[in-house]
Image (cartoon, one colour):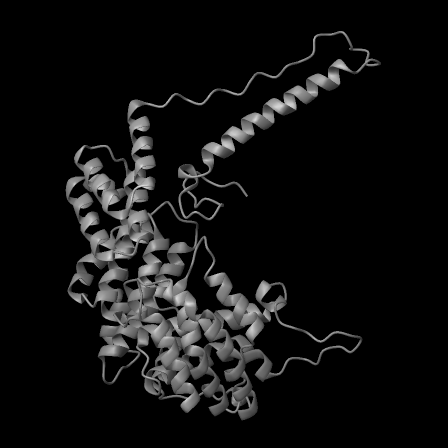
Length: 447
């Protein structure tokens, strides 16, 4: 797979490829081309029986020399070399000096700020970002989705909630260009229970996503479907007696498109609020439909019994059903992580318990994928671990797994939780994740 200039460097440094190994790789490619040319020349010279021997051998033209650096590029490279060699105090001074001297471009501004953020002083980083925004708004705008995602995370971590509306409104303005960073913030706002703000933010972003020409076909439909779900949950959160035919609900949902099935909307609301029940063993629906309904019932259980915010319950429902679907797919890496019996005896057909009860090997693989270096989905991984113990209790209460299997799963998966604990300490921008996971498992063992 070809690595783009703006992609993360494959060496794992965290820098963009063009700022890390690109020059070295280009030099290696030039050397390789020259070596191939010399090898071809040597073969031609020794081809004594070749009828063309004695004819002038073809010598490929040398690769073009690197383009000379402009004075601005040379100055920026010298700045970066000094920046990398300095401590954080001097790095801060170098950034401010470069900003005042008009030496930064968008790439160097982003790289320097990203490096300073990695040092862990989020308050200082926030001040520097605001200085960049004030002095060079065009440089700030070029990487605004990244800065805003970090700023929202910092506001949530610090409890500075008054900043969230302005940050979320600014983030919505970037949704036509970069949905990845938008979705990171969407997950953070949902996780921390800011459903009303999230619904408003997705409504602001929707026209830009719908009209953008930067996304593949279907991305806008997926965005609209998720936005309808968020709008419905925000309605449930603020409404004492929700109704599927409530004009307030329909107006909130239909701004993203028509409701395909009013009956399905009513069914979801009834299942989440606990007004309807669809026991697994008494349902005549296809398995996928039964899983969806079980997920909505569990979502309501998470909110009522375990006190989880509705936005976080949505993340948990989606994570669990995604995990189950991938584990059912024999071609997925998650399914292949499951230990299967060896020998001549064919494995017994999976039971409902096998389908629904997580196992350590496949859950470990699922979490590893969510925490991959190139596109980590930290919130998705964390909420999955936070929800698993409640899911095991829910399955037992529904008669879908035995008490013994629940106990075994809690014990085995609890080891995975212990192993993963250091991961959350590496993400100080959201310090609530680790404590929430621990609290969920402690409560589950006491229940």
